[in-house]
Amino acid sequence: MDIWSIVIETSIKIFVVVNVLLLTVSYSVYFERKISAWAQNRIGPNRVGWLGLLQPFADVFKLLLKEDIVPDKSNKAIHALAPFLALFVAFSTYAVIPIGPEMTLFGYTFSLVVADVGIGILYVLAMTSLGVYAITFAGWSSGSKYSLLGGIRSAAQMISYEVSMGFSIAGVIMFSESLNMNVIVQSQAGWMWNAILQPIGFITFVVAAFAETNRMPFDLPEAEPELVGGYHTEYSSMKFAGFFLAEYANMAIASALIVTLYLGGWQNPLVDIFGITGITATLMQIGAFLVKVLALLFFFIWVRWSLPRFRYDQLMDLGWKVMFPLSLINIVWVAALIMIFNL
Amino acid sequence: MIEQYIPIFMVMVFAIIFGLGVIFASKIFGPNRPNKFKLMPYESGKDPVGDARERMSIKYYLVAMLFIIFDIEVIFVYPWGVEFKKLFADFGILAFTPMLVFLIVLELGFLYIYVKGGLKWD
Image (cartoon, rainbow over all chains, first blue to last red; front, side, top):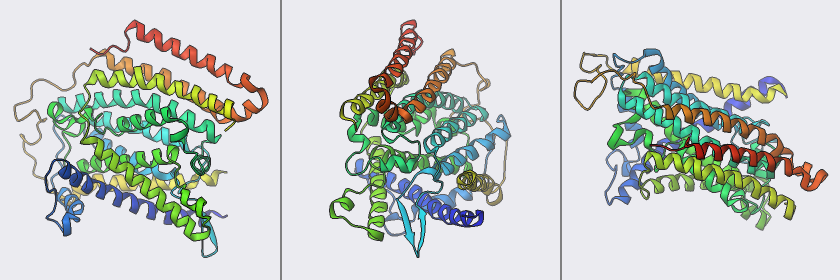
């Protein structure tokens, strides 16, 4: 395969995946507002377009035409670098997440993942660690106390939960014997989902994913009653939109990661039961992946309106004293499963 | 081998272009009418008191150090995790004992920090 065919193939994949991601992000904002409204017995956005469906686009255009305020006290370069970094991280992590098996179209076979590399999980971990910098930079460079507190809190929170996240993934790769995302999905064929085989690891990973994406009940970096807007207090216009976009893109990527690592990725049990083959099977598997991701996104929003926010010491206690030991126990559990049942 | 990574570089280039586009979009399309009060740090409408470049609790540095220590251990577990099934086929239970010892030592270090009060957040 020569270089130009790789470049063309990748360009098409990037175009498709970015559009799907942007659409998911804008409509998860819309559905977040709609579901919040249902949860609180309100109506929610219903003015722009039919049922308010054009609301996300109206929001983006509004933010685009707003003034970009850079406070006097801020460090100008880092103030601009922070949202850029947040977007960069959010829009390069999806590269290794497979949305389906290999697909043959017009006699041309390609894998449904932008970059099918052997280091998949390490790449994801490296990228999510970079995300901490974006928030710390934003908090420190703004020159506002609320931002500083939000940024510092967020850095401490994200690195605390990253440890248990890393250890829970160790359980997954013991089953799959590879760091490649596609191999991980294939190792969960049928109902051999990691969520069923290693429930402890699944729970620690999901909790860590909530903490990493700064979602309720771990949204202390921007706890409104105490910190105004947290690390993005001093951001306006498209720079604010950048953070907002990155936050929801991270949510979508976290859902996709949970699905890939623990909920069988694109595995669709119906395909095996009815013995479907060919293009129908591939489409059903892509559909299964999307349904799982959307269900998890709904779960993210559902949790937001069901649980109260943690206090900061409770958050650190949960991360270090509960989640960290649990993720170590998970490794022993998985090793025991492999040794006793030869899975 | 190296061409596997071309897609990743392309994604990164795209992300860089997209990020820069978003950062400069409002400079191009938005108005620019700054004044002294608009550029003040936000402090609930009051005049800001002091500077934001304050000292912060040592606890945050401690958390960062703990993170570095334990996150490096994660990287030690991965190569063993990838090879575990093969090792088990060859060596049986002996494949697991070294990692068990490693995890116990790690847990002892963790308990030491716990007892010393390194995780107490007040």
